[in-house]
Amino acid sequence: MAASHSEVWQGGTVAATHSLTPEIRRIEIDVDDPVRVDAGAHVVVRMPIAGEIERRSYSVVDASPDGIRIALSVFSSPVSRGGAAVMNALAPGDRVELTRPLNDFPLRLGAPRYVLVAGGVGITAMIGMAERLRDAGADYRVVYAGRSRPLMAYLNQLEERHGDRLSVHVRDEGTSITVPALVEELAPGTEVYVCGPIRLMDAIRRAWLDRGLPIASLRMETFGNSGWFDAQEFTVRIPAIGLETRVSSTQSMLEALEAAGADMLYDCRKGECGLCEVRVLGLVGEIDHRDVFYSERQRNASEKMCCCVSRVVPATAGDAVVTILTT
Ligand code: FES
Image (tube, rainbow, N blue to C red; front, side, top):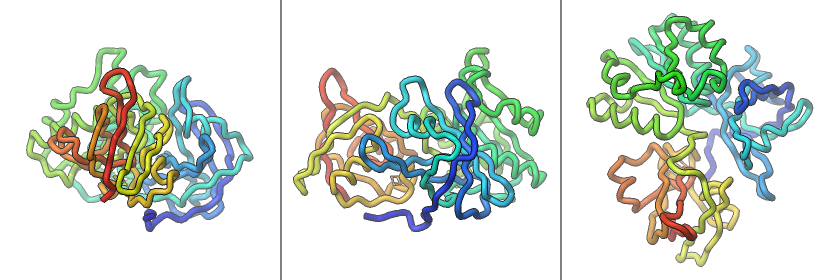
């Protein structure tokens, strides 16, 4: 099994929790092994879910200057299970197991201008970046989209800190984000960072490619994205090793295969690097591609999938089953 080489595990104690919106809870943790926290960093938290030890990634929203206290924000709905339910049940004094802050979404200073685009809870990945750009005196804009103001975490704080540099798009107010216009208006040399639902990221990527902009200037943070369909249970088979297992709605396919004893490769576990790719030999249902690794053509072909994030959903009534070959 391959683990990300940069993961260093530590303990932490929950210091404070409170609700920011009806769906988003802020959790502050005092870590045992503090290090400097860079903008764009995240941590992986290990937790027991339905009898298995699973891992979930969360952006570090902010941290104390000494790195001892870090704040995460967790999205959940009234029907949340899995990681969100475990995180929401945390109370001051509880111990958690987490990595040191990791950063595969680093902010590259030095570009002529920046646009940070966040949808919903994706704002948690952007707050530190916006602060860093503000401190550096950079030319930047923050574009924040949500369903309604009461559901948009950190909105007041952002308005206070970034003033006119913040554009807010609220679906309930009829001011939803218009992605083609946003991309069309970008001045040459702009670096764009995006974190939000898969539909938002996909729309930006398409508009970006349509405009022929350099792909290296578009940076996406994927974890926590919601996919095109609701997560459902499905079956995965690897005939080459005689393995068949169920993937619950709260588990990734990679987690289910690991729990069943398969030797899997992975690195980012966020749908970005492609290392967890599996070949699809047979499919009953449809693949819900949640990665940003494949092109649209590759996704439509459904010959491969990133099993750390992508799932299978039934095309009609009945079970969804995917038969794969690990690479
Ligand atoms: S581990 Fe990187 S895309 Fe799955």
